Image (cartoon, rainbow, N blue to C red; front, side, top):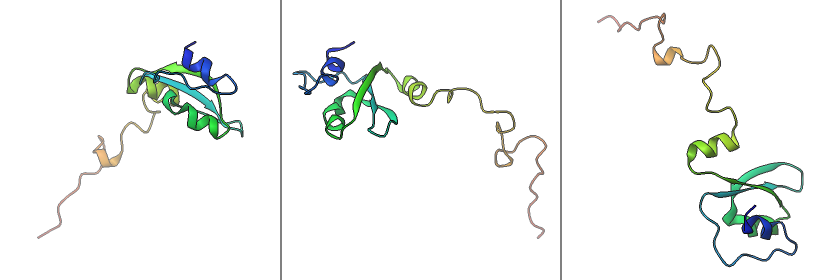
Length: 100
């Protein structure tokens, strides 16, 4: 648990004297119960909106980000959607030019 998470979960919120690292993200919970992941640097703004911080994540690159916010998005496509007619799949009708 980072000092930034501790500060965000303390009431009243007292902003730490340092800026959170760029790879630190919090899981925010909205008052309606839905949650999302966003940068820890925006904690003060989200807390003012009445959101709470339920956890933290260290996300080093876009692959880590994608895995955290959209689990399963790194998996291969479901059968039948790997290719389309627009990508010239085998068995697609060849396009013939119009007669001159």
